Amino acid sequence: MTNLFQKLFRNPKPVVYAILGFVVLLLLFFAINARASEVVFRAGSAIVKGPTPAIGLDLRYPLSGPLQTDYELGLTLIGSSTYRGDNPNQIALHAMLVDGWRAFEMGLGLAYLTNTDVYNGDNVNFRLLVRWRFTDQISLQYEHFSCAGSCEPNIGRDLITAGWRFR
Image 1 (cartoon, rainbow, N blue to C red):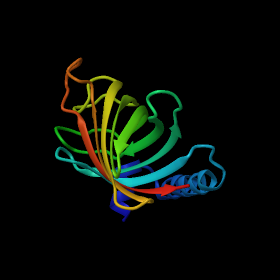
Image 2 (tube, one colour):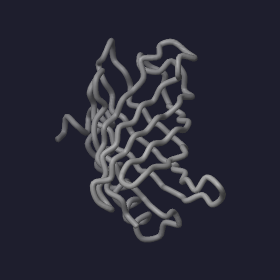
Image 3 (tube, rainbow, N blue to C red):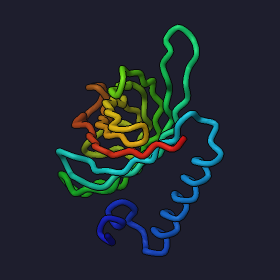
């Protein structure tokens, strides 16, 4: 468990525990007082190149109008990796449109990554999402961050996370 925290945060243990406590309190606050129609906590891993832990928090708001779609705002923390060198922790702030049919959802949006690395050569990236809802509260999603060929390097970052939805 300590190795997981070191990869994700690379801070001394007291700081890691403080960050984890803050995230838990923030989750509880959002679960009770959020104005969003959904709050989703996600945890999983980056896959394919440089596996490392990842956690995220998404707020989902319905849009009214002809599209009848939703938009999501979120924050994802991606741990450091050693793929082709030492890559720092990554924080991704993202906003996207999400729509779907029954239990299947897809999304497209923009993300701001705090660091450039061997995966993404620019701070501004696109974010693609495919999600399957097993139940009303539990989901599994695949997401991809990439600059879509507009910068080098453009390997991209792929994550698989399981989510728990608070209403």
